[in-house]
Length: 221
Image (cartoon, rainbow, N blue to C red; front, top):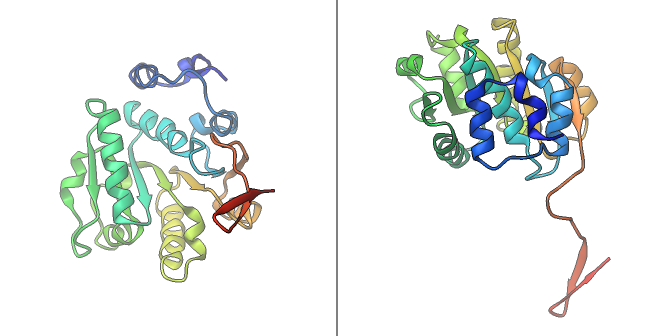
């Protein structure tokens, strides 16, 4: 699908950023997500390979909601280093369109200053703390993104993510939940629990090859 195919479905300012970035065509998973209701605020579970374009799927929905004044976007990542990476990426891309903040620090604070921000990047542990401290802006959230959702199976982080999703579904009945992952063993079951449409695609920008390394040589299968 050419980028012009969604021009009428996204705010003009967002479309201008996409064109400025040189985006001419949606990748396969992005096209599937749009057809599955991404821009109509449907919940989606996106399972596609690394670097296949999952982050842009989240951006399309979240920035659209922000610009159309439907509410804030919260982007949840498992690691502080990834939060820093996304913060820099989004600031470079969307500075001027919306106010972007990162909250990964003190877990004993409700960070009331976030009331003034539109796109908030945080970790699951910090977001759990924000909920427990009754942050005053929580009811303004329109889109929540769970990056690396397969960490639900992680013994240390999984329970926190599961609790977050459960609370959000009860607290914000109209929130759009987007869950992203490269590998999930039970995508249909997880999509059903999330009340989300499942988007699966195997396209990757670089072909993946398997081989055996032996005696300083690699023999590809």
